[in-house]
Structure formats: C-alpha cells, structure tokens
Image (cartoon, rainbow over all chains, first blue to last red):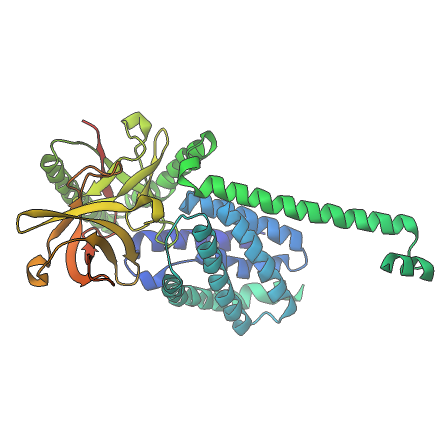
Length: 163
Length: 276
C-alpha cells in the first residue's frame, strides 16, 4: 500500500509542477494522476473492490487539488479504474498492454468529459477541438507512463505480479 | 417461462428464484438511482449558478489554502536552506516586483474602477477546466460576476465567491449563455459585435455580427474592448487585437478574427474590477 501511495503522490506532485511550470507547452498537458492507476493496479490485482475505492478517493483528491468540480473526477476515476481492472486482469502485464491501456484511459477520460461538459452546457467545444485536445495529451503522458514503467519494472512489479 | 422450466427440471425451488429475482430488482433499482444521483451531483458541481453553496464554498476555501501552503510555501521555504537556490528566489522576487509594478500601472489607468489585486493559487492547464482560483473572497469585497483583468487585458469573470477565495471562469470558456458583447473603433466610429467562439487550436476569438465596410489593412491590430452593453463586463476592458476579417455566408455582416491579448497559460497576478 505504501508504494501505491508513493506512486499516487509523485504523480499528483508532477502533475502540479507541469501545471505550474510547463503550462505554455500545450503538448505536455498532464494526466499523470489518472494514469498512475495503471501502476497501482498490480497491488490490487486480487481485490477489485479495494482498487475501485482507492481510485474513487484518488479522484476526490484530484478534484480537491486541481478542479472545482468535487465528485466529477471521483466518479470518472471510478469508471475508468473499472475498465483498467478488466483490461489488465485479462492480459499479461507488459509494456505494450500498459501503452494500450494508457491510450484507452486518455481517450476515454477526454471523451467522457467532452460529453458531460457539453451535456451540462459548460463548454462549447466541437469534435475537432476534442481531437486537438486528445493529440496534446499523448506525448507527455505516454512518456511519463514509459518512464514510470521502466523505473518500476525491476523492483516493484516482479514480486507484486507473482503474488 | 424460464422459471417454470427450471422448476420442472428441479434446478431451483420457488424460494431461490424469488430471492434471485428480488436481488436483480434491487440491483437494477440501485444502478438506476446511482445514475440519477450522479447526474444530480454533476449538475450541482458543474453548473455555475448552483455551484456556490455552503459545502462547496467551505471546501474551496479549505483546499485552496492547502494548495497554497503545500505548493508555494513548500518551494519557497525549502529554498531558504540552499544558498545557490537563494539567487533564484531573488530573481523570482524581482520578477514578481515587476509584475506588481505592471499591475500598479494598470491601477492608475483604470482609476475610475476599484481594482482588487489577487494572486492565482489554483489552476489546471487541462483544457476542460477553464477556471482559476484567486486568494481573495467576499471578505475582500469581491462579488459574483465581477470582471477580472491583468495588465494585458480581460481574463474572465468571477463565478464563485467564498470567504477567502474566488473562482474565475476564463474568457476562453465561452458558452451559449455568456457570449461577450464587444466593440472597436474604426474611422472614428464605434462598431459592435458578439464574441461567440474560441478556436482552441489557433488561439483565436471570433467576433460576429459586425455590420459595416472595412479595409483589413487599416483594421489589423485594432483593439477590441468590451462594449459595456451586457451586465457581465463594464465598458473598455481590452479583449484582443484584430487579426482577420471575413464576410458571413450571406454577405451582410462581418466575422472578425481576433487574438486575445492575455496569455491564459501564464496567469500569476490578476486584478478584480469592482464597484467604486
């Protein structure tokens, strides 16, 4: 559990730093907190309920720190973690499946926000804006996932996955 | 039908089947109620008009203060222990002093308005949340709907006021019910239009329904300011500079493309335009 909290905290801090110092680089728009769920999954491999609860609270923290929409990200994190659980549970935990899951998470999160915000008339984005947003989410986040995967691969995953 | 078949086959007894159908019913009702609850919560937390309630107000104040303490103070306090980094801090302070000086200039220009200077303490560069939080609230006389500017121009308006903090919705988060009425001066005449679109990719605002004949070479780089015709913003707040002009589909009115003068990715110190 300690490692999961560390991963989550590092992701939140990095996302915050990116928001503060790299806000002009739009192609580096971060979504690290949500993507950290992919690396937190192995610990909860055998307990879906705990994984969902953890993601709900991570979403709540994300809402408290970065947005003013309390509960929105908690629910989105919960829904996405549900899919993460089933993707990673049914596949081998390797680099390619992590990239595939990350792409799915980035796409699904943004599409959900697009639908929700348009439904509640909060923004006026078109489908072209959505594609532009999606493109800007890719580089930074996939790089983060890759780096984190190779850092954690040797020390963390080996004994967690084997459990 | 299936139930009867199962019963005849002796797979289930009547009690089991009743229990299972009851469970299914409860599950269905629970899912249905959860979806409704989620929608209601989304409506409360996303809608600007319902957002400002006791719970969100206190949460906003609390989290903004935590954020302020954990990010700003943490970085600055730790730097005090490092001599090399001290130089960096001095540079930061110098930059901050220059920014404040700019803001003071701005204050003297807008002398007819009461400007409340504030620091941005919470922001998310993610495209979806076009809001920032500042460290001033209703105890500093900030009210709902006040315009927020910086030295470069209009940033947005206050959508949520708490005791110590306020939320600002950025100008680029345009939606159907908060289009901005704007004007510009061309050949000593004032022309009015409605800003109703933001191009995310090109960082351009669109001013529509402008009637008149214009020469683009003369019009280029003309300042577009708020008209003061709507309740949202007082007159004369700089929005952007004209970049291009197009005739609309019917050739009756013009659509003007303008670039916002404010860099929305780099907001540190802002001023809230209050009543005098």
